[in-house]
Image 1 (cartoon, rainbow, N blue to C red):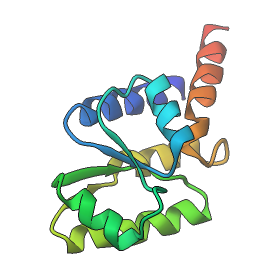
Image 2 (image 1 turned 180 degrees about the vertical axis):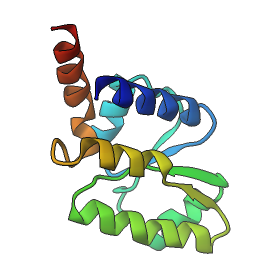
Image 3 (image 1 turned 90 degrees about the horizontal axis):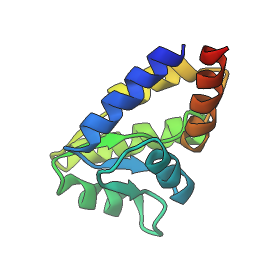
Length: 126
C-alpha cells in the first residue's frame, strides 16, 4: 500500500505544479506542504459562501479538489464541484477518488495523510 500512496502523492505534487488544490482548512494546507506540495493551495473555509468560493476558483480554470472523505467532505466535494462547473471551470477529482479508495477505513481527512504516509513508510522498512 505504501507504494500506491507514494504514487498518488507524487501525482498530486505534479498536478499541483500546474493547478491549485482546494482543501477545507489550514491543517490540510500544512499536511500537503509536509508531503511536498509546493504549488498553490486554497482553503475553502475562508468565511465566504460556497457560491462565492466557486466563482473565485473558476478564475483558475482547473482546480484539484481534495476535501475530506468524511460525510461532510463528500457532500462539500459534490456541491463545490457542481458550482465550479457551473462557472465554467474544471474540478479535478481523480486524486481525491483514488486516495479515498486507497485510504478507506484508515483515515477520513486530508490532515491525516502525512501520518499515514509515515506509518506505511515505517512498515515498508520493516
